[in-house]
Image (cartoon, rainbow, N blue to C red):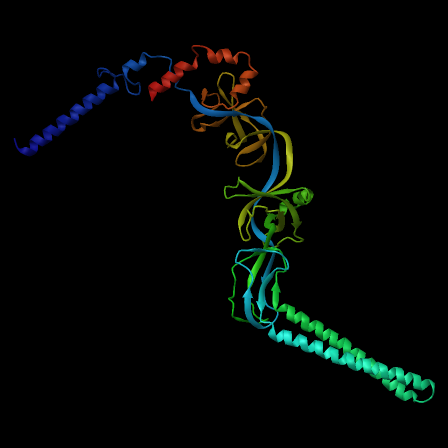
Length: 419
């Protein structure tokens, strides 16, 4: 017999042996095994298995106060932002601040070379002194002409001319005073002071540079951080509720997780018009910002608290399911049987849902295990956070819990055997 023929015969024999073993396993005739999907023979003698029990988690519905909120994304803006620029031309002599320093209104920030402006001020002062001397002499002459005019020793024309000369000199002295004030103001501009309380940023120019009043760069930027603003937008549909709550509405600035509060502030401004392109309205909230947790330019999650719903029935959001007929929940009955119950919900977020009808505060709601769950299914609750409270109101609950053997026990053993 050729080598190919022997290989064919061996393959046919192997297939026949495999088919015989499969037939024996399916019919339960293989020693030590039961029929397919029945497990080992020894397992059939255990009894008490509960193939229909579904493992779930559950919690009780409860009465609670629920805040009515609107979420948005806002931008932090400084209360005041000032770019410090020079008002006179000259060489920058000194910077009197440290970058990142907190300054008060009136603190010196920089100095421009004052020599030229000091000279102009001194010249204006000297000119006033000269004109005041001339005015004093003219007033003496006017008094002399008045006495001579009484005795008819001087003409009226001379008296009138001298009187006009005195008036001209008086006006010139007043102009000198204005020139002095102008020169003094210009000289003061050489010393640059902070116009607000705030924090200076990184300097934009170095000492020794020639600065001009027309420069757009500036010397440094000061921002006022306490208090601080958060500007955000809301849809125009929310405007009536926001207007109703203005004056008492609180605003929470939240962290990136949209849950951790950073700061609590107040709604202070509603913009006077709606953006026609986006259909939104701008709002501004003010925060005290004592710890500088908010920083200009920062993006934050904003939660506007409009009102609080008192003593309403709430359920976990994961317990509320959606079907063709609307929202429904699974309620755990007294015999650990799940019952589907339609409900009507109000406000709902990622954690809780307000249930307006269909539930009672004592109902236990299933929160997980829905993939195998159906109406009337037997369930085994893994965690019931409020079971202890239920036992306080059920005198027989403690006896059932401490009983040496319960009906669900065989089902648990059956589940272990199946795994």
